[in-house]
Image 1 (cartoon, rainbow, N blue to C red):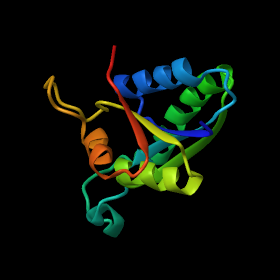
Image 2 (image 1 turned 90 degrees about the horizontal axis):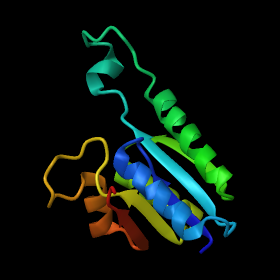
Image 3 (image 1 turned 180 degrees about the horizontal axis):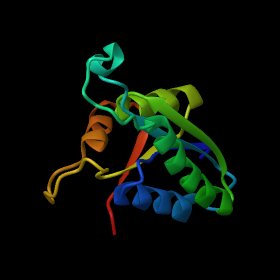
Length: 142
């Protein structure tokens, strides 16, 4: 396998996905494309018509998550590229996988927005399972 695309948001599900890729392909010399998507500004925020006073650098938060996970992959012998992009996480992950011609996409079963039901698949994993045209590994938390 030449390249993995791994979606991460810092959640326990994303951590499980990272551990699984390291377990399956650590030391193989494979490349990893770490992807973290962040929400854009709302229409009201873009127009300056919001009461929100504090601004949060969502791209900065995504880059922090990517930097932490990059270190783990690098220590395990992977070549890593980071991708922080604005947009829907499932769409961003698919876009990066297509651009990089990845052999497999790996995500956690539930991310930071996941609910508590034991039968519910997370929104991103569910979208990918229904729409992706390449191999997909959905990893459950330990």
